[in-house]
Amino acid sequence: MSAGEANAPASSGGYAKGRARREQIVTTAVEVYADVGYHGASLREIAKRAGISHVGLLYYFPNREALLAAVLERRDKEDVARTAPKVFSPRAAVEHLVDLADHNARHPGMVELYVRLAAEAIADDHPAHGYFKEHYTTTREYVHRAMRELAEQGALRDGADPRTMAEGFVALMDGLQVHWLTSPDAVDMAGVLRSYVQQLLREPSA
Image (cartoon, rainbow, N blue to C red; front, side):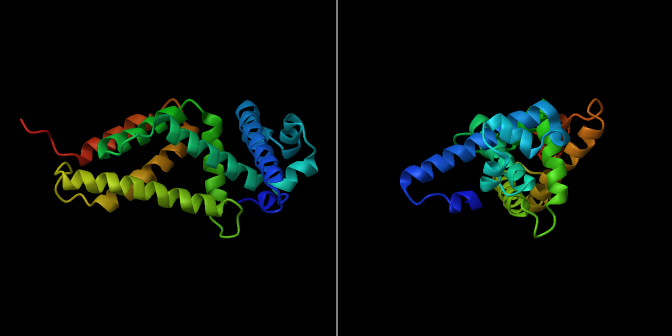
């Protein structure tokens, strides 16, 4: 819960209005970052487009980093709704993440936002530190489950440790985004991830 939500009026009507206003601000922020990029988007511009005052925006998001974290949380929810398998299977789970890499390649503004904020949020006291800690933990466990089930099915190559492979996959995802931002024409994020997974799998039986 954000500071703004915590301070919202106690009545259910006031709370609902507060949540609706917060979601409106996040929606506007997503649009602004898509339009003008990481550096071009100011809190004042977002407040103006959202139809509220700068002070009003700060009531819900006390600083830029807190709003950026909320934007990324929204992106994560939309990614899950768009491509996550309805019924978990290890291969579908991995393919979902590869599909996300392909989707990200068409949305450079959000990739830049994520990469920059991830680097800044290493410090414990950063407003987005909690988001990234939870994000990485959840993603690693998601991939670890997929790798573990592939191992149980006998689909992983001998000696492939599921947890190590999961950590490597997540690290590769993030590292590829940095390389891609630097040289978008030279890096195929989805292709590299797919190749990594193929190298972990046993050759199909003849």
